[in-house]
Length: 107
Image (cartoon, rainbow, N blue to C red; front, side):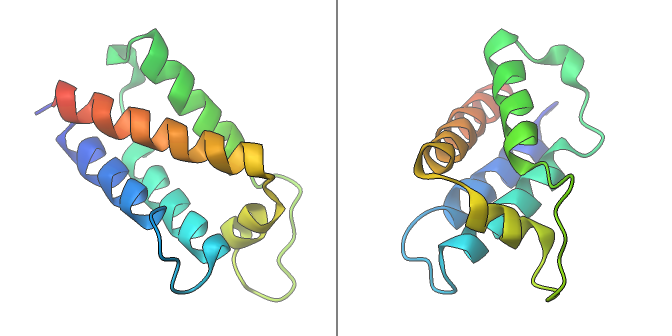
């Protein structure tokens, strides 16, 4: 099981993005970002194919909080989620779904 942990975490991220968003859409996306970060932490990317590598890079880009400030202590990922446009939200969902499937097949 090379990617068993990643499979578990990306499945959790996919679940976080599903309706209903009991604490709001931004909180659900922030929760998904947390699961994604756990999946990517210390992950050996050398075994990823071109598609999986592209999805990982895209998610890292979409999750980047560089330059954001959190004066109200709501969490940088919540702030980032609030700033995402509809196309970016679709891209987060698509990449999470594709990676969850990819990791499940590769584990």
